[in-house]
Image 1 (cartoon, one colour):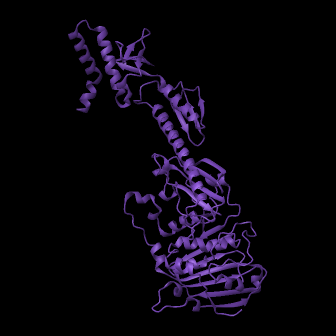
Image 2: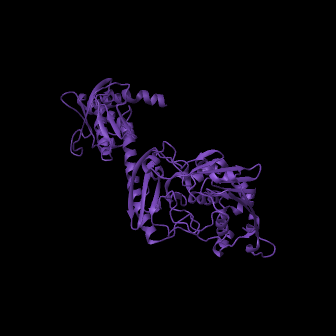
Image 3: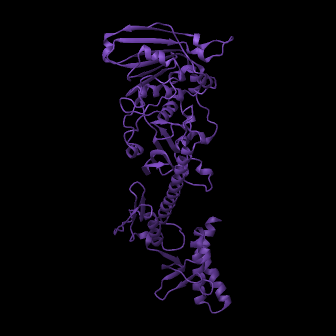
Length: 522
């Protein structure tokens, strides 16, 4: 095979390159690793040595021959004789034949070495990447730039197949990526932008590459894909998909128009951090497309207070190939994509409602289950009502007989979807103390507008009945104080014979109940 060879660049690719489409370092690595995935590689090792200005990408894929390499130099051509699916039944990712071109802006020189199975032939080609990415003083025909190479035989290579890409003389684009990030505000600490370069790169690769989930991943357990994952190692540490989900709220396979997909949506039951992990990651043939998205749900009318608690993944199994933009980082507006988007806006809207209602119920039960001021009404009855609401969201309600003070009166277990209630717990033995005497409390409802005692009354059995409909009691922060004031009035009225006596008893009662508190606050 004759050397040197020459790169034949399609005009579309010249436009892409000149527009710095691959200026993003992680995106360039995505393209290079995608080629390895298409070649049925099961492992890719990426080694970056900034001190030596060298980056290597080695995969154990099927490799390529010198003839195939020459064909690859015809950028944007489709490889001859290659089917849409690989031997491992992978749907091929590479669509435009520009995977190795993506790394050109990041190095002065690019070397490609490869061999195929059952062959002792190894070739090594060197591409002067700098000459393709810098603006020369005089116009240059890129097809005239030599791609030097050599071929040799190695009997040990017969049992091996691999491709090694070596970037030498790393450019300022990589240096800039690994510069210490500047944190401009307190919120930036929750963004991957505040991370160190290597951690940030590993995270971004986990977002885009067709790699597996971590072993104990909630999303991975639900989705169970990919069937043929790629093990990628960055400086000897394995890269996994990013999963910030503690519980999967919904997962299934479905179709929207002509687009088939499976998805899992979940939450850590708090705001998702980093910010970039919020929303749904769309993957086409296992490769991440663009940033995570909530499909503009936050600007489609109602504001959802827990939308930033949601995270998850969508794996497109059919359709949307034609909607994929040339930079492979977004989808163009098509009828298929619009149907797909509308489907997930509806699902996210429903789940955002659900998670908000669940969290409100959980917080309310927690507040009611501890001592302190609460909205008017029986603690137990209110807890039971919130528990009934949570039952509508798939929770089980367990009512226990023990009344041990060391145990919580009520508890919501989000992971198990269980509400536990102990009706005999001391916190539910409600009473109120007025004038140094404790009275049992019973909550009732009656028309406060025409009753002599609109707020409180003393029943024949000695129980204080409190009207939960009385408006001042609706403010939980003041209800306890207002109830005591009403009871002072009630008892003073029962003892007083004259208006003056009534006034004196009210003043005396208020001082007895609140004088100490007032003095302490003064």
